[in-house]
Amino acid sequence: MSVSTENRPWHVVARTLADAGCDLVVGLPSDEPGLMDAAGAVPGLRVVGVRDQRAGACAAIGHAAVSGRPAVLAVNSGPSFANALTGLLEAGSLGAPVVVVTTRVPALGIGRGAFQHTDQAAMAAPLAKWTFLVEDPRQLTWALRRAVHLAVNGAPGVVLVEIADEVLRAPAPERRPAPPVRRLRFAADAEEVRRAAALLAAARLPVVVVGGGCKPAGAGAAVRRLAELLGAPVFTTAAGRGVLDEEHPLACGLVGLYTTPPADRLLAEADVVLAIGSRLEETARMGWDGLDDKTLVHVDVDPAVFLSALEPEAALLGDAAVVAGQLADALGAQAPETAVVAARRAEIAAVRAEMLARGVPADTDGDALTVSGALRLLQESVGRDATLVQENGLHDMWGYHWPVVSVGDGARVVTPGEQTMVGFGLPAAVGAAVADPARRTVLVCGDGAFEMGLAALPTAAELELGLTVLVLDNRGYGWPRFARAEERAPDALTRFTAPSHADAAVRALGGDAVRCTTPAELTAALAAAAEAHAAGRITVITVPVHDADVPVGVRRLFADSVTPEPPSSGAVA
Image (cartoon, rainbow, N blue to C red; front, side, top):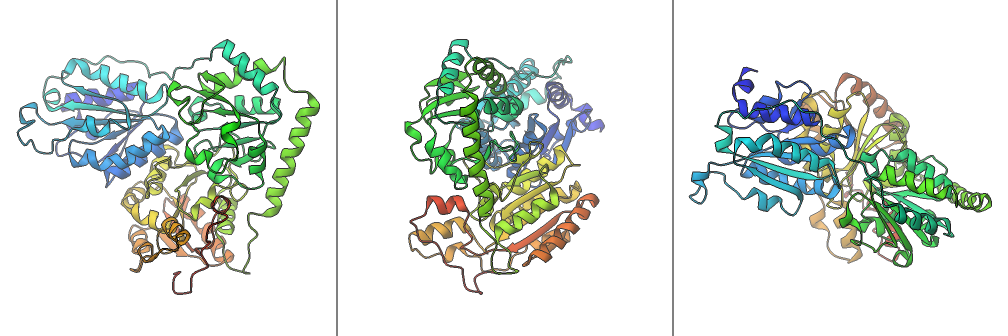
């Protein structure tokens, strides 16, 4: 690796990022030796080469979600940077700590047709927390450490550091070893905590909503203690899944679009909502009757979150774990009476029992596989503490519903954010598996999303990650087809007519590809997938699904809409 030590500025960049706490650099190699080359010579840094910058951005998201550390995306000016933007848009939506390091063309060429010059800062501005152009070698280590600090502190997110060509060709700046960048924790204002605790103590039925911001804070234990003091039902956003074990007696699944009836009754009846680490984005509010009239107690590390969706009665600015602990302590002297808590717990237990009894829904058609049945078999095979990576297509949204899938607090859950880019899942699963290769990493996605993410497949094979992928195949794009059915509009454009090449690609890379139409076939395929994981081979299991197998949350929101009939035998491969 002598080339990385000869190119001293890049070596300083790599060492600075490692010192700051980064452990992954993902990207494509540049024409000249660059960051990826230098990082390969730095202890503690893992270098992952991908075939597509968009996939690299998603892999950085998956890695950060599982490792809890900021990930670095290495790109260059021009198409390389522009191609990464879709994944970075998702990273910004999720609040994923991703440090983008890119180059800038020589200054003398700017405005004169410089090769591959583009205004990267302007392109990144809507989604990045901070952008900075390093034009002097003396700025280099400061800019990189500040970038990591901003990526992990406050609301985590995307930061961009551009390094001018002149800096990379100048003598290397001095680098002094430095400690990792610390994640700062701070408490909320004591008076605001007292006000919030009083609102919660006086509530008839408080509800706790847990968002993805609770994960970097490690807020699980504090949230559980607070909910148990209140006897309050706990709902999570998609990103918040795994903060509380979903078998906990107060856990009621996901909120909004992914709420499983009759848990929506608890949301409708609530008078006070405690939201911790969530922006209460649109999918979290979907189908929530009367939310605008409820009293909101909002906890977040970012003041910009407050009043973005709803105006809180009490806004508590601080770390999710610290503030949840403050609230629990404040409730100690004014917690609801034991009888009140017992009554709430009994109501929650009845709701959970009804959810379990419904089976959501019961499998029918004899030996035919429904989506919910396939997901249950998947979970039985991999357990509740695997890494679960999800997309957001029509059929795979079943996986967001408890009790179809039940997530333990030891699990890692990686989901897209509000942008829900198609093709997110496979590259995100690569990054997640790199972060924890011993843990089973499973991806649930549709056939369209899987094909769009195929650029990540060679990387999974090269790294011997042993991913297990469940592809729910409706031969096209399910959500647009469902939406068109509502409008009674033509859906020919949503249907794939050419045969899929995905299985051939999997097999060409040494993986296993199998198609299952019965529970027995899927059970056998999952057993084989466990062996393939141990051997480092990817397994792709495709299950044909019907258009009418619509997730319960979608049916709940579109109860008055036209539900598509199961397609003819020729429409489902």
